[in-house]
Length: 161
Image 1 (tube, one colour):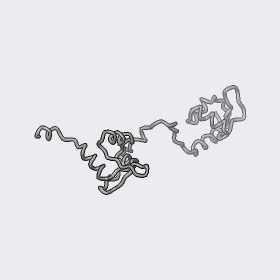
Image 2 (cartoon, one colour):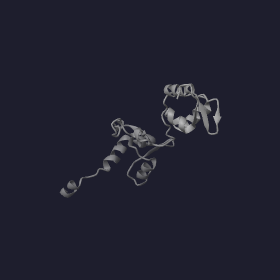
Image 3 (cartoon, helix red, strand yellow):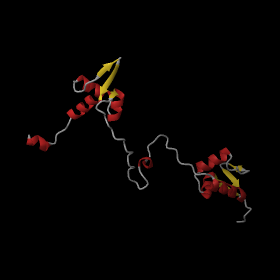
Image 4 (cartoon, helix red, strand yellow):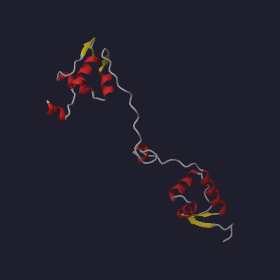
């Protein structure tokens, strides 16, 4: 076949020759990124060698875009380069000062609790809450006493006593 021969190719055949899917080729033709061949015969176009080469040149220079995830979680978002889980970010060391005065949101955020958890502890009488000017406050010594009061003893220490 000579180099100036016009070839009649379906979109699927042309896409296979260009190394893309038929859908990609259709989108490129529709948007004008790849020049449409002059003549169309039903579902097929008449491709000249120059048009095929121009399409190849465009495809070789186009940027490769990452697939859109459409809100789905992807494995590579949660895994490191070697396939293992990424290390969690270090959390700052929590320090509750004995003389400190804290708001409920500060303590819930610091301890990773729900607001209702502190409310339940207050209702059950295990946590002391101070109310001034319509606001609830937690004193550092009360939070520390509450935390120390919830100490879990190991089964061995229970047997010893």
